Length: 233
Image (cartoon, rainbow, N blue to C red):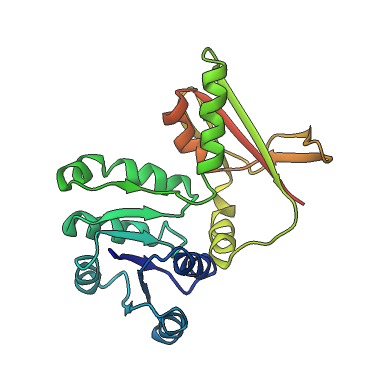
């Protein structure tokens, strides 16, 4: 069975991916910076593992050279994605990650020429953000092809945040929010617009957030003005 590298396997989401990989008879090579938790996880699921820091390019390139694809799950990705993408171009390894960070989506686009030359794909955001919301945006655009504004809101009922998501959000507080205006990403105060929405179960007050689709939905739909709103219950 062909393998892939799962970096950040011992994180909150990495552990979920590891367990699911086992259920679906996949064979990831678990990887991360700290040997003890990575080794314990690998022994639990009978997977092989590697231990290295992303800032050690020699070790990173060696590990990527052994697999056709990496699933990068170690955020905040503003600190980790570039090293992994650079190494993937060198080793011609396909790249996936689970980011929701606007800056990382925008950075990934700048690898287009290099990725094509290397014959690889670079696809950030293959987790919850931005797959379902971006699909919904395209569905709406197909239903309303003349639309020039896109506003999507969602709410989470219960549950919590992973450590990586919480770290990303806390680091981004100083940057405020973001929207698309006339095709450009524009910084705004966090939560600068709010509204009540009836979600069927209940009415919930939502506010604008810098969701990843501010980057991706523009390229998916071509709609120039985009806002995303969210509330966690």
